[in-house]
Image 1 (cartoon, rainbow, N blue to C red):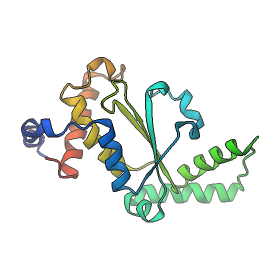
Image 2 (image 1 turned 135 degrees about the vertical axis):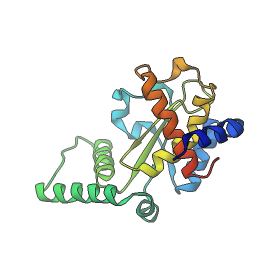
Image 3 (image 1 turned 90 degrees about the vertical axis):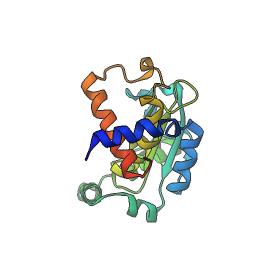
Length: 189
């Protein structure tokens, strides 16, 4: 991959590569036939150390089997199959104290076994997606989101103070390379 060429293309198009948070949500909903869920449905988010819970503005789930079959790669599908086989082998039965906890336990199992993918979006500036999580393994969806949220970060629209505080300069450079790859993968350049 020629990163110099990708960087030059980025520099020419960067003003069109910055998306506001509502547009990111719209594109995810349309592309993946997804739906919005409440952040309270994902009970462990309040303890997440990667995102700021008060700044989580949208949670999206992809659970259409046809869509999931298209977005997971062979390794991801194999990992999900291993999880299903392991849960079946162990005869996993999970206790729950009420209906809300039963639904949450099922959400976790469905994520682990590849029947759903949850996306959590954070906005610390109220305008752009400042961070995101995909709760399930899916390179394609992570790359697609990065192609739509990296522009605000790498053009300086999101102040450095709102980036993950523990990122080293080397990790930032790697992140920019991944962003360029994502733009190329989804023909955004």
